[in-house]
Image 1 (cartoon, rainbow, N blue to C red):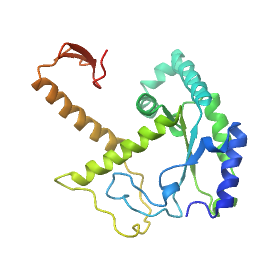
Image 2 (image 1 turned 180 degrees about the horizontal axis):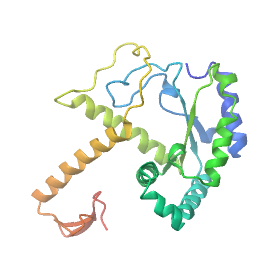
Image 3 (image 1 turned 90 degrees about the vertical axis):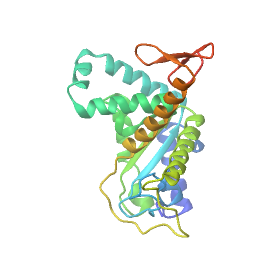
Image 4 (image 1 turned 135 degrees about the vertical axis):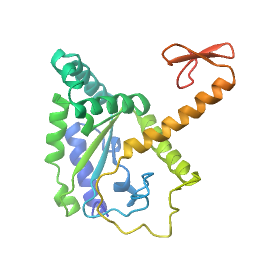
Length: 240
């Protein structure tokens, strides 16, 4: 169990609610923190129970905080010095790409993808001072996910379940089916969860492109837009 009691869960959420000046219903713990075992589409982690070394994943749903973070990121990325560093530093470039992906698909910023902005410093201080040890009886690491609205939360969970079902249906190396109880916890080196999700998306996009080409779709020179059936669409199939 991530948090030892309902009372401690209440205390921890109210700590964050007070710090962010939000109603407690705008915050929740997600993933294995919430359900007690992992549903990541990774055969090493899937169905594994929450363990002593597992971290806490805090979701914050607030459009004002999201827009504030987004604005500060924009200012940071427009600084010439920072733009230069993005293309020289692999870690910064990877975080930049992750921010674009997470913001575009889910309306979400992940704490560990943020650059050195004021919101990052404030959030880091808040997380570091949280009463984790008092509420969990273990000094767990904690990460935060800032969502623009609840639709982003829905999209995130919906796509996670989609990836899980797709993993079960694979012909080669399908994901293992769950049993009556979670698998015992084993400490692992962090997996490539982002890469797994990206690989699934690239496979799906490739299949969609092949289907469109069979229907006679004509793409622009950069592969961003296509015309088909009398309309013009972007790469995700949205009518322009």
